[in-house]
Image 1 (spheres, one colour):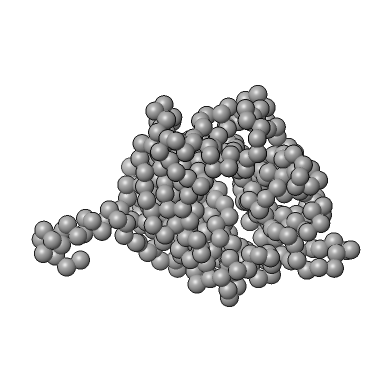
Image 2 (cartoon, one colour):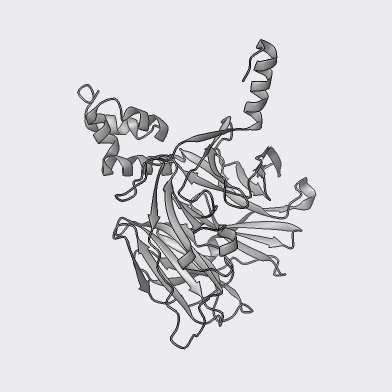
Length: 398
C-alpha cells in the first residue's frame, strides 16, 4: 500500500480514521505499521481528532470503581467496552483524561474508597490507561513531605490534576496535599517522560473542595480560596509548561445567593456550573480565556422543565452545537436543546455513578506498557432486546 500512495497522502487519509481501524491496519505491512506507530503520525491523528471533534467516547464508572467502561459518543453502539487495569479487584477512582489517556487512582489490597479517607498515598497507586490501545502504566508512589513542625502523618485531602505540557512534549500529573491547618500544603509534579516526581512551589491558595484539577490548553485549574474556606472563591491555575501559578476572574453573577460551583471544560473552553441548592443550575462559559467580560451564561436549567435532578454536569456539545450533553445524577445522560430549552434525548446506562467524555487516540505510554488487557464487552439494553427478538423469531439459543 505504501508503494501505491505517497507517505504524506497515506498519513493524511489515515489521520481521519478511528483508532480501531488503524490498529487493524497495522497488520497490513511493516511500512504501514511503522507509519501508524510513528510519533509524527500519532500527533497528526490526535490533532485531527481534536480539530474535528471525532473519536470521542464516554467513560462511565460504577460507584465502587470496580467497573469502568467506555462507549461511543453517539451512544448508538450496542456494546460498552470494559476497561481492564491491574487493580480491578479493589476498584479504581477516575481522576482525569487527556488526549486519550485516563488517570486512575487505585488501592493496594483494599477498596479504593475505603482508603481515600483519610488519603494515604503509600497505600494508593496511580495508573495511566489508554483504553483504545489496551495499554497501561503503573506510576511510582511518592511519599508526602510533611512540614517540619507537623507531627501528624495525615493530610486533610489530596487533589490530583493531569494534562499535557506542549512545551516539553510531556504528560504530567500534579498532586496537591492539603494539611489540616488549611495553610500549608505540598505540591509534587510527575513527569511521564522522565518517570520522576519533583516537588515544586507550594500551592498559594487553599483548595475549596476535593475536586480534581481541570485541564485546558496546558493549564490546570482548581476552585480555591486565598486563606480560608470562608473567603471568596477564586479560580486558581497552574501552568504545566512554566510551573507557575495564577488566577482567573469569575463571571459577573446575576444571582449572588449561595450556590455550589464546579469547574469544567465545554467545547474547548473553561466553564463554570453554579448549583443553587438544586433549584436551578446556571452554566457559564469563558469565551476568551482570562477575560472577565467574556464569561457568558449559556443556559439556566430549573426543576420545572421536566428535569428532576440532584446534579447536572455539562459534558460536551453535540456536533451541530445546538445541544449539550449533560450527566443527570447517576445512571442518566441527557441531550439538552438550547433553542427549545428541553430534553431532546435521554439515555439510561445502568451501573454507573459518574461519566466523562474522553478521546480515543494512539498516544503511547513509556516503555513497560502492559499489552495483556483483554477487551470485554457487556450487552446494553438495546442489544439484549435485539437478541430476545432474534431468539423468539428464529428459535435461536443466544
